Length: 316
Ligand code: HEC
Ligand code: HEC
Image (cartoon, rainbow, N blue to C red; front, side, top):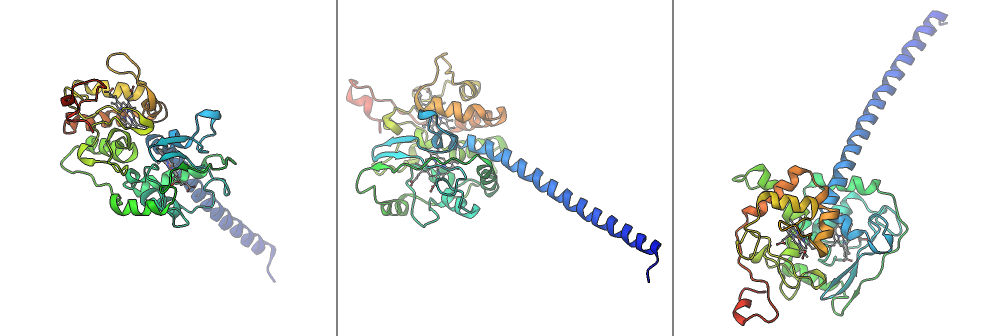
């Protein structure tokens, strides 16, 4: 028979052990929570940097955050962005992280169909694995919305998703972002922010008749931008690009939307500044400026309606 003091001793030991275990597991739990909240914060920042918020939130009808519905006019018809909140029926609440990674880097939906490249997975394909994990953590934390997706209103044959498969065969190669070790860390950060996350080329680079980017003319602007907008040349060409801008001029624009001449940037770039670049850290804004100023200048005259034909030699 156990004497009372032995019972107490056992009881005390039992409590000490369980308390230690509980505390131990509580600590792990706290660490996980901490890690998760750091990921959520990083993810929130990355979603801003990548412009997801601007496209997946409908500014008309007082759009709900990331609930989609924004209309994107293209030569192929009008696309409506989907709801990417965590609602299982209307959003992507049923997705796994790996579904998300596949969508972002391969342009393939969980049911195996192919996305239209108006969702810029062509640029996002190079997002790093860590960044994708953090973006996913953030998407899980965003309040769900019951907003239903709207069908795209696009012309035949583009209305058939199989055309995306053919398009991808011709124009899409999944990429992995690789740092250029001959350049500074700041330049590399800028290259990642401009080329991958910020997908600046989706607007600033001209496209061929199939809507694929002409990388030879990267960032040289186009008169056929999204929604029929004219998009300026942001290579450092003195005459037709941003060659006479200082680095500060670029960061000032990214922060405030003000151009060097005191005018305010307009049309879709105003959205980019409001929803994306103005939320970036000063370090990231300056990395973008460093990168843009380092590009090979491309001479490209914007077309003038009545200008002589030779003015249009370099137009595309
Ligand atoms: C230029 C506008 C645009 C930007 C920027 C954009 N998307 Fe999208 N996204 C779309 C469109 C349009 C679709 C629908 C494509 C389709 O139907 O083939 C889409 C589809 C998606 C889907 C698939 C949803 C589903 O229900 O199948 C996910 C997930 C997604 N986007 C996440 C993101 C994230 C995360 C970002 C930022 C890193 C982002 N998108 C940036 C336009 C955009
Ligand atoms: C949705 C399309 C779109 C995206 C994405 C976009 N831009 Fe723009 N950008 C424009 C348009 C349109 C203008 C011209 C605005 C105007 O006419 O006032 C512009 C203007 C600019 C200018 C001013 C050029 C000048 O000569 O006035 C700079 C610099 C610039 N963008 C940099 C960027 C950078 C850097 C990114 C990526 C982080 C980016 N843009 C992404 C559409 C876009």
